[in-house]
Image 1 (cartoon, rainbow, N blue to C red):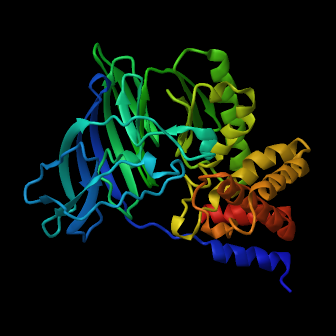
Image 2 (cartoon, rainbow, N blue to C red):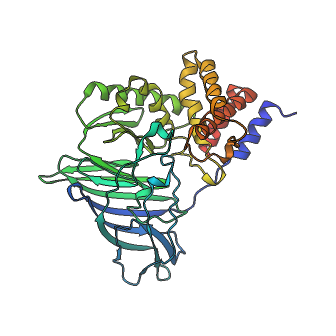
Length: 408
């Protein structure tokens, strides 16, 4: 019979993750004109050595031209694969229909430049039933209300199967503030435009670009920059989120391992969302003002920077991170208040209310929630599996297992 110590080491061996090699790097020069729903981009792309041919996909409203001599760019007749790994989009309603391109590089060349421009404005559509409190979705939009561009916007050349790093030089209207992954390393404001420099050296699955007219608040939190971007000034609300960021960064850093990014930002969106991106969360204007969000959805999205946006998910073998994040955020907070048993009871009650033999499935088949049964399995059933694992191992080895998994 396995002892707790042997189970601990067995789990560590089973959970050793794939280590990424060289990444694609994008050096993006981006100008956004919200009044025209318009974007203009020059992208210098560096690929791993040895690649002489590659394919990428791009938003159909953006036609690329190659600027590097000797590099051949052709549109492909093959239909583009719209799939992108993402925690935030559950339906194809949240995906643009991209165009596929092929690039051929001279031998020994690893860098080429593209220029493209055009309009991106997709209307908000209702999400799947029960998904994220029936939040609406869009593949991407550039409007005077704000800018939202994710990987599923295909606003930059997406190369399937490759992690990426990036530098982003961003030009916005005067009075606007941008947000992306990683760290803002420069900002200058002129009479007509604001310019920002962003850098992300941690390998990413996609690139986000969010912008709007924000009031920005900031404080230091154990070496991490805490940020709050609000559409209307509200120092009291901002301070609550800045303090909560500091508390939860400290809690999870001690429990799991160092926070993987230079900052964490709460960004107020211009429609109701509950998105967790690497190093920031995009929440709707009503959501952020619910008092319970500070100690429920907010730590959940922050914790995703360890599980899902730090250690990534291989969606081909199931999405384990939502259940683990729910266990270590929603459940843990209740447990710290002496309400862990009632939270688990409620989780089991919800499961039995909506799941039966006709719609049950193993947790390693869960990808994302799209209705009540899939939510109860991917979040609730997986949460209970981690609780059972903790009971088998005990608290000490359970925490060590998670910490070693994260570190590796």
